[in-house]
Every structure is written in structure tokens, then in C-alpha cells.
Length: 216
Ligand code: GDP
Ligand code: MG
Image (cartoon, rainbow, N blue to C red; front, side, top):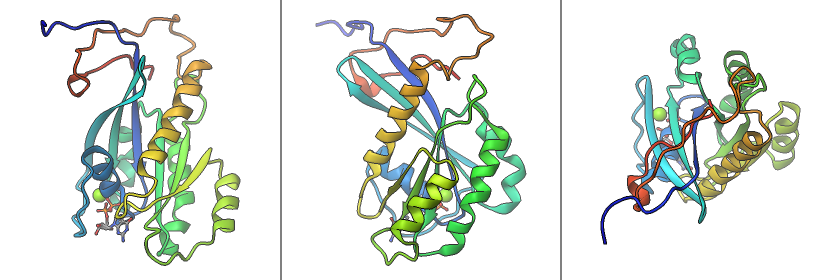
């Protein structure tokens, strides 16, 4: 059989940002999701790290998720606008063993809402991740639930990157929400004519799949 592309496959490509205080598990989350690896040692991220993975949603639809892991240090906060540009969704992480990182979630959410929105002008969907649930949590489930509602997170998920708990679930919840918003037209710039996004042919091997259409 030839290596020529077999068929057209409709798809989507979304930029997703990860934010939260240093040491909450952002880089670990990306490594677990993309490469299924976990490193217990801590190496601070410098600036921004970028990874991507193609997720098969169904036989006929695949989504390429471009994950931007933004450094959590306060002194880089001024740079976040450039990193957020074009984002279609966000994970906001905190460490359940560290109440200070939970307190900072409000600041991160505000930072996102002030600096980026969907092309339609609507806020980007934010999923709150309560990470490190393999350790003793200092934030109760009720507090978490109420907090997520009060601060307009469309959902929250308790994760352990270490134990690989709910990582794929969290990504799939965010992808589904982005697809929903896309379908309802919120990812589209009202000024651009409908269907102006490009669709390209993908190869038969999903690992070689590249850019599809980016609504952002
Ligand atoms: P970042 O600064 O937010 O990118 O944090 P990292 O991803 O570098 O993680 C900080 C530290 O927390 C590292 O030592 C990780 O191994 C550890 N870590 C990340 N996720 C978990 C988790 O779910 N459970 C536990 N116990 N440790 C974790
Ligand atoms: Mg990091």
C-alpha cells in the first residue's frame, strides 16, 4: 500500500494554557499527558514550555491540543499576555496540600480573563485542577465545589499526576467544552466569514498528524 494520505479527516487544533503557582504540577501534568512519564524531582520551568498531542475523539474526529506550560513565578506575570494569546482553553492548577496555591487561583483566573478571550469575545473555558490528591488534602470537596462555581470555572477535577489519576479525563472534559463552544460559534471571529479556516489532508498515521484548523 502506498504511503499517500488515505482520506480527509476533519479535525480541530486548540491552544491550551496551563497556569498556577510554581510547584503545583503544571510541567508534570503535561509530561504525564504527552509522554506518560512522571519525574519526582522539581526543575523550575524557564519561561514557557510547549508540547502537543493529537487526541482521537472519534473515528472521524481528532483534536490536536497544543499545551503551553507557563512559568508560575510572580516576576513573569507581566509576560503572560503574550503566552495567553490565541488560547482556546485553560487549566488552572493548585496543589491540594498547599492552601497558598489555592488562594492564588483567583489571581490566575483574573489574569486569564483580563488578558485573553475567545475570538467571539467570550471568556475562554477554564478547568480548575486540584492536583496532588495522592497526598493529604487541605481543601475540602465542598469548598472546592463552591469555589469553582463562584469563580466561573466550567468544571473542576481532582487529579494526581503522580498516580495518573484523572489526567486524561481532565483533558477530555476541556476538549469537549472547546468543541461545544466551537460548534456554537464562540470560537469564530464575528468579523471573519464562516468557513475561512483551512482544512488540510492528514496522513494515515495519527502520530504524524499535523495542523488541522485553528479557529483562534
Ligand atoms: P510546576 O512548577 O507547576 O511546573 O510544577 P512541576 O510539574 O515541576 O511539579 C512540582 C513538583 O511536584 C515535582 O517535584 C513533581 O514531581 C511534584 N508533583 C507533581 N504532581 C504531583 C502529584 O500529583 N503528586 C505528588 N505527590 N507530587 C506531584
Ligand atoms: Mg513547570
